[in-house]
Length: 187
Length: 352
Image (cartoon, rainbow over all chains, first blue to last red; front, side, top):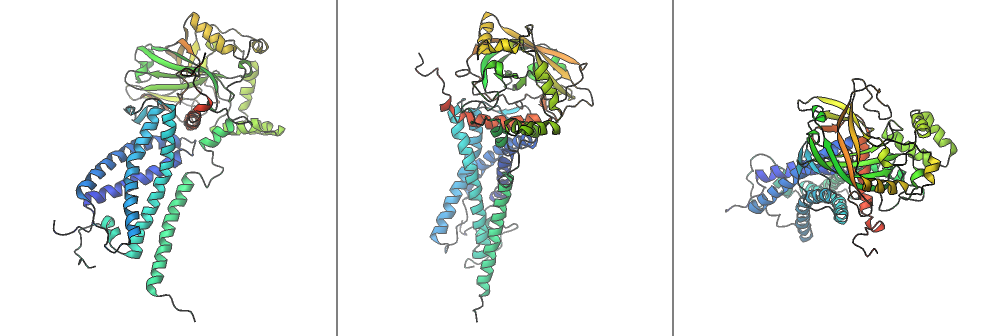
């Protein structure tokens, strides 16, 4: 390729925005379900499990696409600390979207709960029953859920900073729709 | 005169404020969903907290029905249940059961004769990998109508205010039936002589997709023998456990599982209301208990008898309790399994 892409590929943008919706919903469902004893508890739990598996599958797919398609370069004038923060937060986001479903699946397995996705459809246990493993994974699942939400808030803040303050095209690399507009490289 | 702010800087400032508002609103919505802004929301944690004695919860143990003993056995299904539910567990055959006899108390060291309500938890596993977990009690109905009222009952019971219980009973007259039962129902000297009831109603779905609201019970084969509670309290603090160990060693104990089918209009959403006695009751199989094991090293200890773990063909109904129980049982499980050092197993230790 001779020209440098300014935007993520359409597949990457589709994956990003659909996963953004799934993950935000997942985090709200998670904190909501553990704070209610109403029948909504069962409804939310029944969404949490298949949605978690969907996120795991999408995250694996997305990782593959990212390794294949790469990402548009960050603006050359981006200060080094922001560049570092951008890279680290993306490692964190990829790590969390892969780890959270696995931790949840593992903690249910270690507690000997059947992992029911839909009526009559179950996932196999991925760990033997163990109260110590359950405790470890459960605590990690809870703590990392809050960390995940925190990283997402930073991500949203940074994206809007690029869009509204720096206006450097980073936000548009993921957010814009329609055909890529030809702009002079100097812009 | 002050210098006017240049337009570019003013716009950047406005943008930063907008970003802070977006991020702050998202954080606030998250905090609201998590209940952090609603100190009066009845959360599973608050419900479980209310179960603990004033001196604190017994670490490492279940937060309610804390005293118990494990068993293993079988469930032998006849074919009658398959007309009501497509669940594999009602296909004629014999399926392994893991269970636990227990007392309705938050104190794992309570004297057996001091606890009025006895219970049983069972987990029936079928070859298709599905499970039916159920936690039943020997009460024929629940003391209150709603999970919120149960929380209120716990608070009133723990309250030092002598008027608290009176006020609660005034607001929840259904509690009177429990008082009458507790006074009049005969005590027995054995877990094996009790009838245990699901209390909550569930929905059975048959092969044609027809749904029916049901409750179920297990009815003992052993003849109940009434024993005055004064006599029971002379038998020692753990007489129920000693008795069931000896009894099952001498021979397996069994119960017939009976499914009661609601008629239209029956109060399926209120477990404090018994259904009329003439409702169709279908014997669907026999539960047999053939081995007892102490809880400390037994297979039931780290199992959550969550009544919403159900096979395909059985589902929750409009009864609000199973959801509340599932939420609270999960908290109890998460807490007690994290406290394993306070209730260590002995089998791998250097026990003499």
